[in-house]
Amino acid sequence: MKKLLLIVAGLIAASALTVNAQDATPKTKKAAPTAEGKQVKKEMLEKYDTNKNGKLDKEEKAKITPEDKEKMEKAGMTTPKKKKAA
Image 1 (cartoon, rainbow, N blue to C red):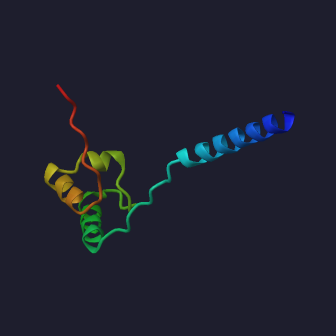
Image 2: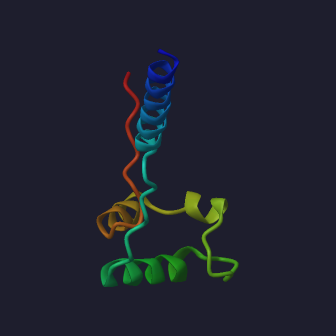
Image 3: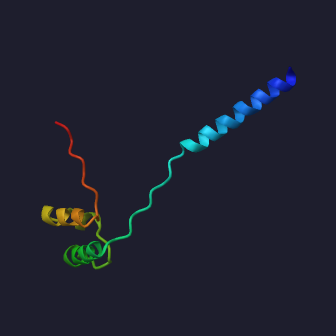
């Protein structure tokens, strides 16, 4: 009887570990930038990178026009923001 109880307890523990391990979601990698994406990034840096550090700071990003934001989204550089429900 003790042997059976020990076997059942071992199987339950093993199945719990297996189920727990399968719940983990794999991290997604960013897709490699396309040629269009690289070109758009270069254009945006030339146009908006005022301090010429090769990156767009918060202040520089705030100055991007809606047309350029749309262009960046189409090139896959940003994800469209969800609109808030009214």
